[in-house]
Image (cartoon, rainbow, N blue to C red; front, top):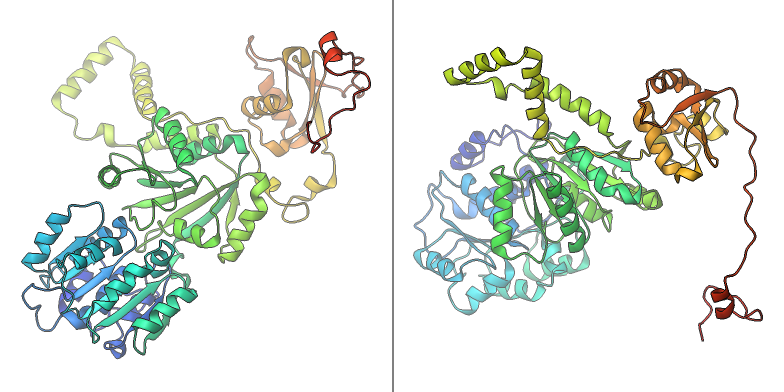
Length: 572
């Protein structure tokens, strides 16, 4: 935030004190624009991306309409904030509470899925600010539990989302129930025709503030893209989670079924994960979010709709297990991390067949990702080793009993055995990483665009090795490739041609890796596939195909005069 405007002197002392306690030394561009004293009495139409600090922005924006030297006693609401989802409304309530704490503001929420009777009681006792979702607010208006006749300011947050969710009629009902002199602040990530029409009807001489093109909302997000074979997407998610040390991670899937399946996969492997999807009731959603906030769960698997508006503390990693539908969805997903000055990482898993779509999504969003390879199981194990050696938690606050047990162990076991047992305790806390058939970074680009010169030049210059397995052992290139990478500590681009014969297989290893590979294979265990160097490969032979014969059953089913069925031809 160092490049943003400093805290202005015109801020109300209550708000300035609250910002200082939160560590604010400056405002983001959207906050500074909305808090401009020159716009104090004007309606605002603000285009701002997710994660740009807009909640604090409109908290500052409505302050002149609420605060004099002090707040009046609580009664009919003075300000109303409308949000598209429960989670966003409750998040806004939390943000405004700390911002208006010194002012003594009473802030209540009115959202679907919560106790409507309790909300009515809060409204009857008197409030200063109401935060709610359109449907529940209309319900309270209809029952005359909500009186907006004293409203001085109204905020429509994520107005484009509310229109997409079909809340236009509810918004018009609410706005029609507010005084003509109220101030209207409309916030939207995009400004489609529907938003402009709404602003024209319900705002007066609105000042247009555009910070949508400002990158500050995404400056703290590192975008990465990793190629992955379609069958290995879940394994890629596992290894990314194991590689990361983020206290909280959000994984996006496109369907409820995909959310359920990935959740089952991760929990089976020992990850503490929860789900958010449209099939969950409000109680279950609240339980899931609370588990993430208090650290009982570190991973949330969600659909796009279910994740709208949620704000997870310390969210450092977003994984796109499925490609987003468009660039706006990509930005909304990624914008869950890298907030309030914290760094975040967004990783998109891209099957080779979807690479062009991924590149288009990044281009349309103005994002330049870093293409990376997925972490291998060996890399993660090395990372675990480094983390174990740095982890001081097991050695802190040792009691006298702990020291006595240590002496007892050492009287029975060697120091090396005790250390090995401690290492196993550390390791057993961690889910096992997955062996992934690697897809190197250079294979993610078309020839001539960033690939090494030798990658597009033709066959590699390498040495040949013979494996003691072949077709008789049901050998196949994929399995052989995986074994070579694991046993030989190779990268995919170091492996050239693979020729499978009846009882042996020949593989080509690049010159840069061949010598180390030969030394490692010389230490093979008796039960492992034997691999020996070859002077040169055997000449390639065309595999003989057995003569085609038809069984009596097939002959009976297809007479000699019958024509073969062609694809696309109707069957009778």
